[in-house]
Image (tube, rainbow, N blue to C red):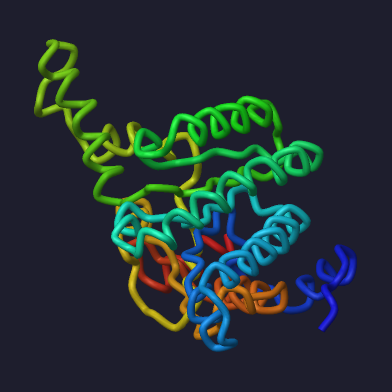
Length: 261
């Protein structure tokens, strides 16, 4: 199936999008690369390489549709437990992707950010990350967050440690720590929280991904493996989101009343 162009996709959304509209921030767990390769009797790294192609397609689609933020879970803090050879190949692929893709992202006005504990990466990878973020830091199009060596518990912990240090130094009182002050120290503090969470590959769990930020996020699970998650599948998720009613603790009648006001 061919990828719809920008004009035809927007036309489709004018007809199918529901009352909630499109999300500002989409967060994705890109699951199923290894299984995709194994189904084809190929090494797992082949699936990861195929997954990079899907990333390109999703970044392009998100930018064209006016989505503000796309956060992709590339490598969790738990993924270090995988076989050493696979981890090494993933790090190599990460390096290559940073080298080959950043200039294209910059050309398309995409702001790239790597969120996670970068200290675990080699100095070479850390430098390449810093260079990529510096190059794209002033772009004002799509914000692309790549979560690498990231964990939701780590994100909350590092935020609370910052607040604890401020308390220790006398800059704030312990009772002044609030959900809002914690949120201000998370890695995504300057961004809207995810409206839509997508997980490919059939699993139905969050897996320590943005667990604070996903508190009121709409969840979408699909059995489609990440390398097969094309633009059409992305559109299905967006349309599903647009037809839901987000209440945030209110009643459905309250939401409808505010929407029709």
